[in-house]
Length: 147
Image (cartoon, rainbow, N blue to C red):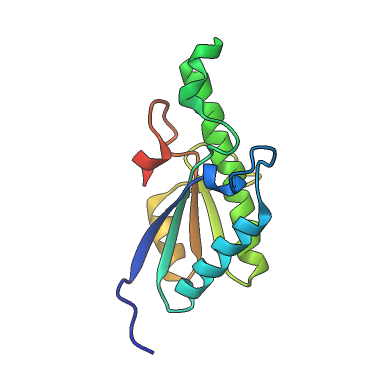
């Protein structure tokens, strides 16, 4: 087998794509499983993987201002949605035998580690897949900005 083209990648996954186009489902678990199998294939080649996942399938912070919810509050709600999706992809990846760490820019130690750059790099070096939740932890920035 040839050496991988990249040593380390950052993969941006759409939260909105997780419902598989089915508006009645928040998460289509067959989509998660498909993502996990592709990620496993790449990880098995020795590539270090970090993932940024959106939350659009659950909540879009930028679109709530029209409803009367404060934009900043809405953005934080969107960040929490990315953590929920991060937990879902983490569980699915682990089901396929991969080691993961979910890290968040917002403190919530019961479900994920705080985002500390050196710790994240060390996890990657140990072959763990890093999943970043809560974006940058700042309102007015999307997960695309984080990626």
